[in-house]
Image (cartoon, rainbow over all chains, first blue to last red):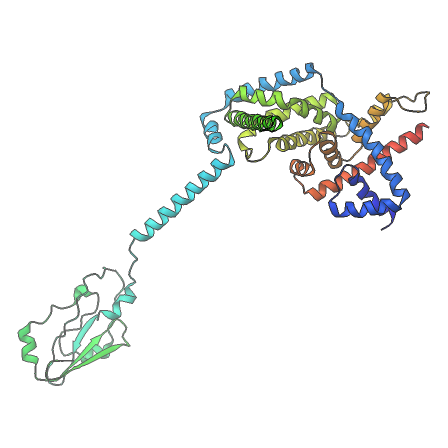
Length: 227
Length: 201
């Protein structure tokens, strides 16, 4: 670095604003460089003149004049302040309060959100519930047909949706009254034990129609009445 | 315990009490207490007015700036972060108020720099050297000739005696920027003075 390069460092060094490491390097340089030492002395002299300005004072009359004007305006501002302004000042009067208010609001929001999540039951999607509940039972047996009992679905909600038409081939295969398609409310009443007893001992094929016309479930019931 | 240690402890506890009282005064003023605000004003008005005068170079403008500063203090004291020192915040308001006034004055036709104005009053004397008063005025002109940011850095660091960190806080810049402003400003001041002295001789 040439001597010109040291000048900005010397300008800081003169008032002790230079950091320790460059200050040490400058110390070393000043030991060998006369030009920079002279520059430092000149800067010191200028700084001395500058620091003399610290002694400047302001007369009391000026101060009291300014104070009077400020207090006059301050009283006007104070009179104009509404209760809303005061409330805002009280709430926002310091960062500790601000953070406390923000933290409290966040806690309330989190509590409200978690309460809502825990108290609202999720809506059961009808499509998801239907495969477990057969929509219709169409017994088609070579010898004897039995009305199968569809499992009761007491918790199933009433959902209005368009009913899908029953495929023609399924209708044609029906020897009994038309199959029941629709929600569980339309499922026929369960068969009595007597009817079940008469059907025992003969093979029975049970066809179950689901809402999807492409899915048909067949159950073959043996002579003992088990599946 | 030695007498010196007792004195030291007493001084320290007095300082703590003062700072606690000062914090309480600020708290009251922030809540809208006019008498607490007046106490703050009595304690700080001198430094605010002197700083404004040094930054603007014009007593009338400085009075206006000081007035603005204290009205802003009263309005926005509740927003001041009380975990931080009060002085840098006050100086920040002062610098901002002075910048506002300086930019208002900078309109065409109204531009009268202290440098030109004051130098008209610095008449050459038959003596080779400047008198103390002339030297003071020359230095005022030199400070006024600095660019706004450099002037603010020099005034706060060298004339108001703030640390580099406090100046950085007051000007809302990094400490490296403050050092850069200080370095450039001091070199400029030196050049300005040398030029005037050469011209006079």
